[in-house]
Image 1 (tube, rainbow, N blue to C red):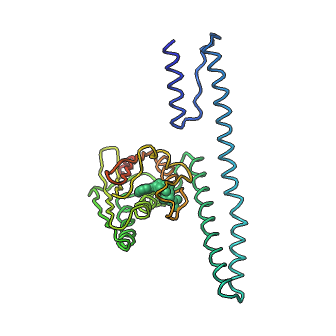
Image 2: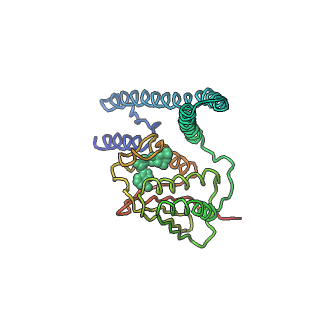
Length: 275
Ligand SMILES: Nc1ncnc2c1ncn2[C@@H]1O[C@H](COP(=O)(O)OP(=O)(O)OP(=O)(O)O)[C@@H](O)[C@H]1O
Ligand SMILES: [Mg+2]
């Protein structure tokens, strides 16, 4: 009996970790456990359908709204070409900024939907992680310096390679560096480091900013989740969802840890040796 209860608990844990397709095994004896498993399976089936249709609605909205919003942008551009007063110019420019933000959200949602639906890496190539990290840190160094933040980079000398999509990997590291610079105050230090084992490339992006409390470290990967300390900072709450989807697509793993103080993002990507 304890074994049967443990099987139910294990299935519940798998589902909590994101495997919505898991179901309880039936023992075909028709006993109470079988009845319970049948009812729970029916409930799980219903939940999975609801979640799938909710995702579908989000994706459809993101897709269908892009065209009218793009047209709206063209109309705003045309209006800006016409003679207008300074206050109208102000209103038009605000409208354009808000529109661009909305388009950015829809484009991120669509990118996420595509990655969540696909199992294969598009345009899969042998990518140099060291090369990507060097060029991204070069881009972010002056941005951070302007905010009186310090960026230190310690990369393994080895040719760290991974099988993946370069554009997506660049986006992943950019989102994490963008978070470090946006969510940390002036005077903070951001450290990017990497090391390799036989099978894994490990990249760490650590800062000494406000950090993320332990109980929020899973939730921040959900779409549109932003913590209270970020309310006054512009953002959509989709950056970490994209990071997680890109890591998953590349068969990697991301862990958020306490940098005491600050946040430590640890990314592990499978090593791909150059033939
Ligand atoms: N380095 C960090 N330090 C402290 N909090 C962070 C850090 N990175 C992320 N967070 C918290 O996690 C939340 C989610 O991050 P996420 O990147 O998904 O969204 P965002 O940065 O707010 O907006 P955007 O979609 O533009 O990236 C942030 O709003 C912030 O509260
Ligand atoms: Mg972000």
